[in-house]
Every structure is written in structure tokens, then in C-alpha cells.
Length: 382
Image 1 (cartoon, rainbow, N blue to C red):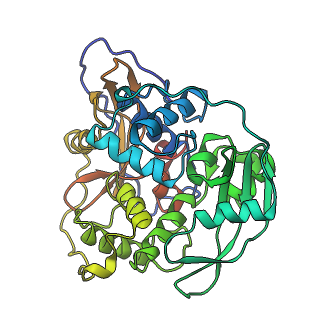
Image 2: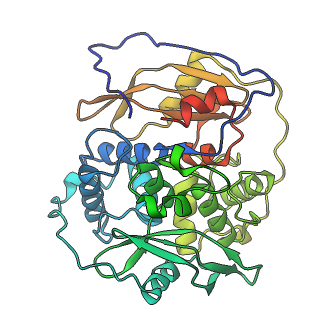
């Protein structure tokens, strides 16, 4: 949980800048609450009243999601799927639609018992497939308290069948795929299905409550492949092939081509994968990036400039630190003030793009691994 700071006036920045030693150890590929904290900030920036930014999917946050869905003209169910999270990020960056533009919906009422059958689970998983994917096998599944684990085997554009992981929530009538990374990090997944849904490899479930492994990156790789960007196997790693695919999508979407998944690229990719456009087949693949001279600028001014560019509508920085650098990575914990008058310390992960720091999708990069421990301990673990 993030602490809330009361700041009576603008004060000087608190700065801690330490370079990671060469070959510093890296943390396991997990992230804690990264996506949920960002989502709560986005909701508050739009006046949806999610309350304290605590990384938990509680009643206030769920009702705020429902209010945003009403303002956006999409299904009001309080469930955060890929489209809701993408639309929310885009709205927070642009400043609209805001929740006060429409009346708040009535709180959700009790719903019918979840239909834990193969047919119902399969229908939910099929509805979540991307344009180039087809289901080969509906996979093992398990239901607990309105959530379901499902591991269907899919084939993308006639490629090799691959087993993927889905987390589904019952909306009263059908199962709906949710943003797996968010729900895993929020701690709302029942223990009976948590390890199978949220963790990969040998990550011990009993010592990692409220973390997710590779969920965000796997989804992103599937989205890139659906758009013909050739990210390769959905292995949850941000390797050279996936980075090249991100660059290709950025070129197609007319975004800055740097291969970095930040607050603009991620939502644009999710939106494109739902509509089928823009696709990478529409433009040539961009050339490999030129090598830059000089190392990252680990200074207060450079770090603060990146933090300011990442703010949502209605937010301003009142305290720019602390921050810490490790190679091309940096953690930053600025305190922000919102239009509603709240002041909160937030957690950011930054990557050097050759000329400046850029705030990245913290959940995706934390899950992918490769971040020096000196940075990951502050940026990825809550």
C-alpha cells in the first residue's frame, strides 16, 4: 500500500540517485499492484472516485469502474477486461470522457449463480480470442466464487497450437475474460486457482500473494501477433523479437518508434487488436534503431521531466522524488496532487530511450524480468 503524504506547499525534491553496479542481480519476474494502482489513478483523474490508491479491487474501485463504463458507453458490469482498461488509459491521458458527465450508475445487485460448465467457460474463452486466433481445445478449467481459471489451447493464423491462460469472471449471465495481470495483483483471486492463473514457472504461491507473472506481456505478444507484427511465441519475455514487433506496431500506429511500451503504446495496441487496425502489414518494418552515444542522464531534472510527461489529466507533481537509477532503468516515487485536492506518492518505472527517460508499463516490464534488483525492489515490489 502506498502512503499518502500531506504537503502544505511546494517543496524541494527529495532525491536518492544510486547507480547499479555492473551485473547487478535481477528480481524474479513478478509485479505487485502495478496495474491496479495505475488504474485507480486513471479513475480518480476522470472524477470517478475510486478512493485511496491502494492497489486493491475493492467496492469503491469497482463502482468507479462502473461509472467510467457508463461515461464511455460500454457495458456497465464493473469488470475490467482488455477494452475497459485500454479505454480508461486513453481517457485519462486525454481528459475525457469524465465520470461527472453522466449520472453514477446504481450499485450492482446480486446476480445468478455462476454456470461452471464446459460450454459456458468455452463460450467466455472464445469471446476473448483475438482476430487471428481459433480454439483448438477448451482446456482444463476450475471455478471459485464467481471467477474461473481456464487454459485453452489456441492456434494463431494456422501456427503451432499454444496453451494460453485465461482468468474469467461471471457477470450474471456469461463468463467474461478479465485483465489477468490486474486481478492477480489485486489479491482478489481465490487461492484455489491463484497459482494456476497468476504464476508461472517455479514461483511459490505461498510466498507471493498479490503478484502476477508474465500475464501482461503474454497478452501483449498475442495482440502483436494478431496484428501481423511477428512477436513470436507468447513466452512473457520482452526479448529482441517482441521489441522489434512493438517498434513495427508503433510505426503503423504513427507513435514514436522506440520499442518501449509506455502509457500510449499499450492502450493503442489493445484497441488495435480489438478492431484489427492499424496492422503491421500496412507499413514496412522500421529499421533497427541506431546506437546512441553516452549513458543515461541520472539527474533530478531528467527524471522529473519524464514523470511530468506521464501525468494523467488533473495531476501535478508536488515532490519529484525519490528516484534511483540502475543502468538504463530508474525507479521514481513522485508525490502528485490531483484536481480533487488529494496528494499521493505514486510508483513509477522508467527506461532510458537513448535521449530521455520514459515512464513504462510497470506491470509488463516487472513481469518480464531483467530489471536490476536495486531498481526492481522499489519499482516492482509493494
